Length: 169
Image 1 (cartoon, one colour):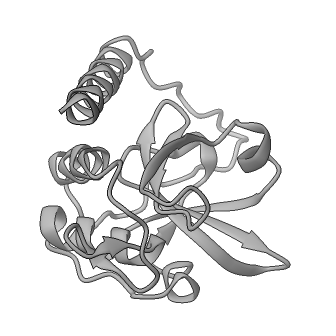
Image 2: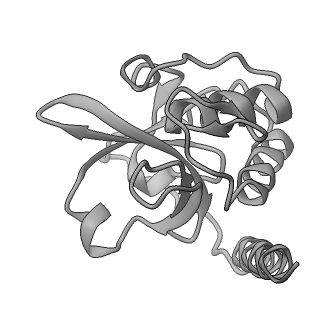
């Protein structure tokens, strides 16, 4: 019961941060005429679906890790978590392996990252791990170390040292 209450408090707090951050954002800057323009990738998810993906991913924090797992009842590995969340809340069929997730959707620059985007970690050019960005430099993922789905910060010492790419499904 305490774990469930603690998770509810965490999710509520993060949701409040995301809402407040959106309310306090500055208007977009006008691109300089000599600067290369970046166009927002055409997302297959609406902004509302991306928010649903985010909230649902957060609700799964604490679910046990299981290699090959792809349901809340059985547990998750990282690509199983992503596939389940995007199919359940976004209606998208995602690739089942991290190697294939690195090509899903379109590449997104870090400055344009939004909740619901994929975070793909690489070592020596190969995708090794993935998660779902939820805002405020945080992402939800299913690491085998730690034993359960968790929320981590991209700027933490460990994750900041990793090679990372962002994708918008």
